[in-house]
Amino acid sequence: MPQPNRILLLDDGELSNVARILEALGLKHTRIRGQQVIGKLAPPSELLITTPRCADLVRRGSPPDAAAGRPVRIMGVQENSSSMRRKVRRMGYHLLVGLPGNDEIWQPLIHRATYHGEERRDATRVVVGSKVTLHPDAVQPQCLEGTLIDISSQSCQLLVPQEPRAKTRLALTLPEATTASRPLTLDGRVTRTSTRPGDGYSTLTLTFDQPMGADTRAELNSVVNFWSVGPPAGPREAGAEFPASKSAPVGQETRALSIRVEPGATASVSVPVTAKETVTSK
Image 1 (cartoon, rainbow, N blue to C red):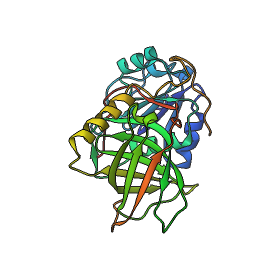
Image 2: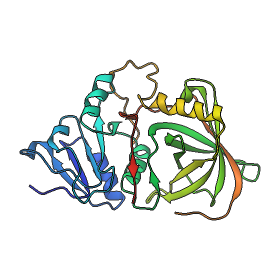
Image 3: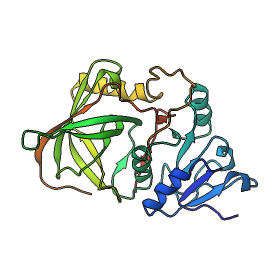
Image 4: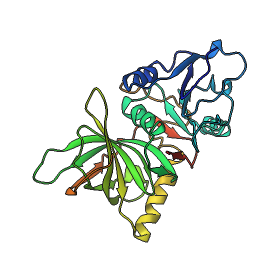
């Protein structure tokens, strides 16, 4: 039986889409079928992606060469229920992702879990997956659609169809559908961008301005806590199956943009299972 190294995919065929994405990103990984496993596998050093049926086949803990907070453990599931979240939390997993899962969700999660830059992020981060619209100024009047991947009390990660200019300032407005309260506007600056291979999409990190007003900070913390137990169920009842999904440092400051999350566009393809998902990069 081959031993897993940096990235381990453990499934019985359900994660073929994830394997394709890893290959497209040029990331070497080990994929093992659960039915072939005898005993327990050693955990990988960076990223584990598996399914509920195979989750018990990997030992808990981290290998000696793993960085702090690694491996990141992600479970692909067919259902979203409180009992499932409690189960995987007890097993030490960080995230649930509804299968098959959008590429727009999987790619940034994989990129963040395998990032080796200098940034260290210990803030609680929750996955959202909402569609967003970027509203440029009059110089570039055409709106751009994107995806709010995740958010914390310090920053958020967005997927956009074109890379913004260096140190672009953005205003991110979260509507009631995302905050479960009143709309919330957050100002910040792009601190990292990364162009995705193949389709030209870019992942950007927006770091919020500090210091933040006390009221704004309290409302943002409320949003993070709200999403830490999963996205609003909407017309779905808890426990229902997930709907099928479609499948660098920067330089000088430029003009401001406004980002608005489309109300009602929350995607139920990714659900955090812990209030604390720590991803630490050396």
